[in-house]
Length: 191
Image 1: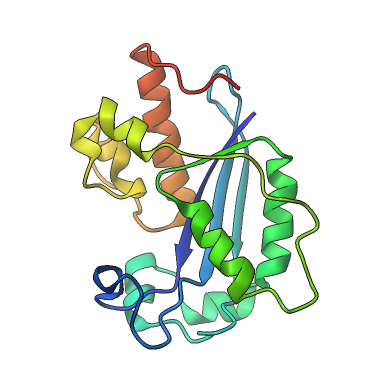
Image 2 (image 1 turned 90 degrees about the horizontal axis):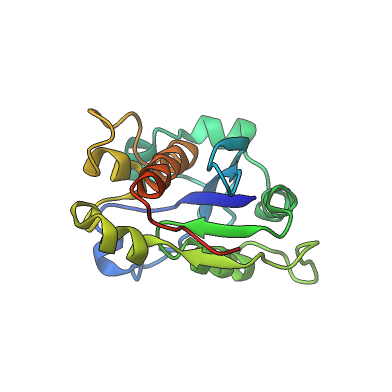
């Protein structure tokens, strides 16, 4: 099995350009999405989708809500503490290789510091991780400036972008792109 995952995290207008260096700008995870893929066929074997209640910035910015479609009411009603979501995600991963289009595991690491209360820890260690962005961008140059949710569109596999900046939808875009690369004869991983 291979796990493809994506995150949505707190942001504000201009935060990415500032490197989240403005006052109070922490990249707190708000959504974890993942797909469990059969390593030989890349067929979807399972889904994971959790909303997380940020601890330092519990009120989502209007910019974040507009970008992701995730509302404050969604997080207030369905969000869980980060440690709960992380433990569930790690159970879903079952120590299989985890891939993301970008260094999402760095954001997970930041949230281990930002959102886990002192004296608490995840019940499992983090799984082996690979950032596949350089690999995808090298083989499909049209994807270089695209987000995870636009990968399949940029690769010419979709005529429209279904939903960008939704962690689970972004995972489907990544998985479709990986299946395309495999059809072209490119090996994904030797795991």
